[in-house]
Image 1 (tube, rainbow, N blue to C red):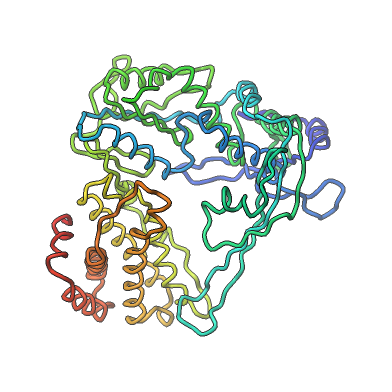
Image 2 (cartoon, rainbow, N blue to C red):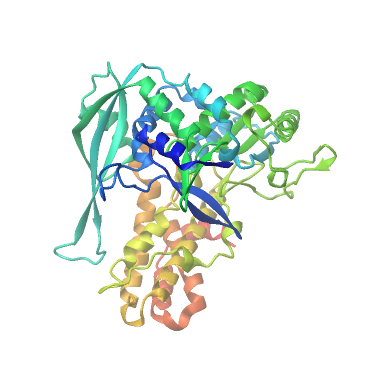
Length: 516
């Protein structure tokens, strides 16, 4: 994948451009390590002594901004690409709704491209990307986003806050007359909360040829320094690059258009997160053809499928070899989710994390007041599990939503206990703070899941649960977790029993029947 470059040749390349060289960092992957090029690291500027220049990703910022703009203007060029797992929900919801009251049999097939970033042909991806820009000139605008982070969750007269300031860039066309306030409302503010936007900080006009030359240099002349030697990546695109996901998405979207066009039908839903393909269809012949095409390899796209990672929910073989099949009644796993093969209900796939040590995933604050961030950490532990795909009672069955919520509370309680245990004995939260925290989690959970703001942002979303259901699910989950450590939490467990006794028994029964 890499070839050594002589020092004088590497020096000439580096002197001729703003892009510097990167270094390798190793990321754990199971029992092995995955090499990733570190493109965020700043290097010493040429002729500036000890002054640090911009990182490679910073230099590539205008190209990234241009591609983001083109993504917004022409999303169809990205095919089945998803930018996050959350993008699965609206597509799956729409696909499910298209069948109305029908209950067809769904055929699932999942394939994984082997070493996707390392196998994409460089010349082919550069040629494809030449057709993506729709303008000859772009305006790159920089702005600042400021957020206030509360450091102390304890109620005080003077709460301690810390301002977080970050620079961001966006691209607009030359004929775009939108002012900054309108830009915030139409583009920037849609995915931000509690943020102050400061605009008109910097503005630069850049031609498309400059942007494409920068992208080409980055792909064809990606220099990596190991020790005192330089190496050039001769195959694939740089992992760790701010452009890598976009390049991969556009390239595989072309693959879909050229080689998987038979899936462009109402009875098929093709999803792809970078290099993980998932097909859901009511036509078994299309599911089989999809697997066969992908397993056959697509050399013009550098695609080779890892057959060990292919998974289907029906019987089939490729070249005489049986493809791994999901057991009947099991949920189909995809990118950390589990999808019901009959109803398309969505749950979090917890099988791959059931044996993980919870404390290994926590960041513990050790300081003069080690317990001051306890409540904030616990609330965040729930918030990251609050995506609407798990709690939409219009898409999911009520039992699925109740079970999802109970398991989310259980995971939150596990993290709460693990955080408590990791703190020094003298700095651990007392029972009163734990009770306040559990009460706060219940309040926040109900507001998050049923808020008017969420319904306005996602008109199709419905979460038909009551505050009593949320309270019982949370209290029951916390009780089951802390009961295994009851010697330290006798007071909290007694309080939970009291609170459970106050809840309306008829409404509680609606929740309890779904929890085993």
